[in-house]
Length: 312
Length: 312
Image (cartoon, rainbow over the protein chains, first blue to last red):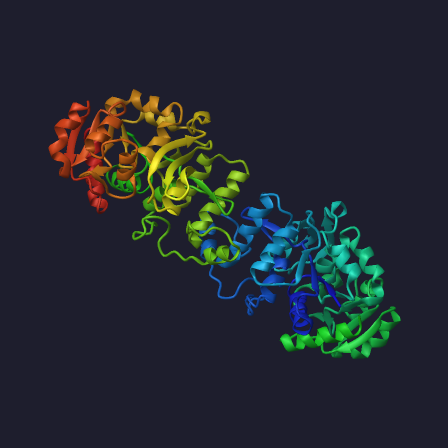
């Protein structure tokens, strides 16, 4: 009985941590967003893949929610001396991951095989797949107070501007030319349960669905697909999902999420705080399950996973 | 009145440190060996250039004699986790230099302009030139006790084998196809004094002379060229120069050095410990100057520089 999870970063990583507490790693496939990937100092950085890896390896920094615990920042000081950009902090230990990824990509290895090597090196046995081995970049059009509308890379919006600027459009550059990484379509097709993790629907799940074939593969499994709402009581627990949904014209609620996911998944898991809107979710065409979805710790995350598996 | 110094790593860096104490940085050009360069973890490492830069910036680790002071080694731990080679230690701060060098080389910048950027970033104003922008690799044939003779990269011999294995040949791979980096031939041609630093004649100065045009440029300035012997009392102060000279059939003494450098420089500076062999040096066709050449500190290095400048 296998589970395939469509993943962004932090929310998905926490869900996966709970899921493997329940079913172990060997039957789990994580299909992860690469639209956030960027090149810094000539190094290929894959924030969502690394967040999932470090979280499942219990190596993530629990305070920051990204990067490695017990991290130091010495290389960054010297990069600053050389005039390199400093708006995206990279720790010394974390840099090793980007160095190895870049070394292997340059030697011709696809991102999926590099990702597998990194995951195994951290002792993971689940299958961790980038959604595609091809270049796909999430581009965000911001309404800059000074310069007017302009399109920037996701990380420049998310980290550089601390996602504190209005967004008028999101585009997945290069998506139409990508194909799913080896195993992605099969993992979605063969899973007992397909899960849409509680990640940002626009910039975390959106890029996955923009890879030709992935939306179709999920839709074909709609009856066994379960989404977990990333919106609780009208707000995102983390990150700019709420603000971004609003700015792009979506309702910021479990009903808004249901409208986005109804074509893809038969079931939506919503938080008890939103129980009073279960009827409206069902009116959008999804079965609605109410549960405690705020994953404060591994036990709570395992609880969410159990609810999801029950309804897949 | 300008000075051009042909340089390897540690010995040359100490001499330069003394020289700039005497004449300042602005009139000094250092032409540095790149035969030791190597690629580690996909990053371009230039040990001799970095030793010179870090030493002149007073940032070198004084105990180790290479790399940066107050260094940490956290990235290396994670590189080891990924199965990357660990025989060549790279500190976290030092890694930033290799990352920036690699980034700029990949973007198409020549090594000389990258080196200039790195030197300026450390506040240096002397001219620091790699001898060539083209690939040149020092290859060492070792007589391996287990496998018999085989040719390996210099760093594999120097660091990987701790230069503790017999050498039967040295070759400068690619040298015939290189040209001197911009400014190298001019700096040798125009200098009031050309100095051959107290570096390993075979693997530090040798690669410089293997770049077509450099030997000729130095020879043309022989009357104003001064070499400082890297051999004192029949031994190298640091590194494998003595052992390597012996294994390659040279006499390990100031007389052996005179035989190697007589075609290039009119004058050899030898240590007081070797004063009794001054006549033999002169018999090889070089003027011989006796001085205290052991550069224990900056003052002593400045003293050596003063002697050199007097005789250039």
